Amino acid sequence: MTAAKKARAVGFNHVALEVGDIEEALAFYRRFLDFELRSKSETMAFIDLGDQFLALSKGRRQAPDDDRHLGLVVDDKEAVRRALEDMGVEPLPGPFLDFLDPWGNRVEIVGYQNIQFTKAPHVLRGMGLAGLGKSAAAIEELAEKGMAPD
Image (cartoon, rainbow, N blue to C red):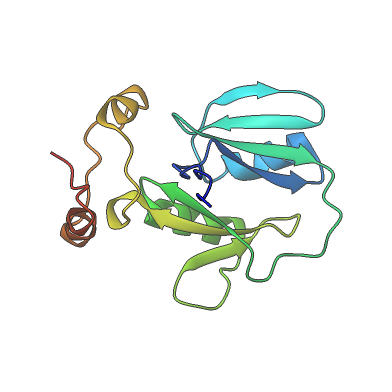
């Protein structure tokens, strides 16, 4: 018997977070992120991330997240840290920059330069981030997989 061909996971198109109110959520996230909206309705908003997006959906009903979280990649992690501090948002205990948004969504802020995740050069250029680079450690991790940038 031959095994059926499986699809290969290649990335994420989007992640959806449930929030209490779309306008309040957009106002909260705008306090520490610079972003464009793809579209918005009374119950949904779509934050553009270049070739991906973050969806905000009205209707959070579950308890706050514990380990479940979104790792949100940014160009300047320390700018987010400072903004959250100014907002009075306490980071969660641990080695990472994790916090709960007002609806209980756990978000981990990750610096682009330090991770294996790579945006294609034309996507970065279109986002106005053409000079955004990678740390030596991230490049080494990518090279080990045959994915180092040219």
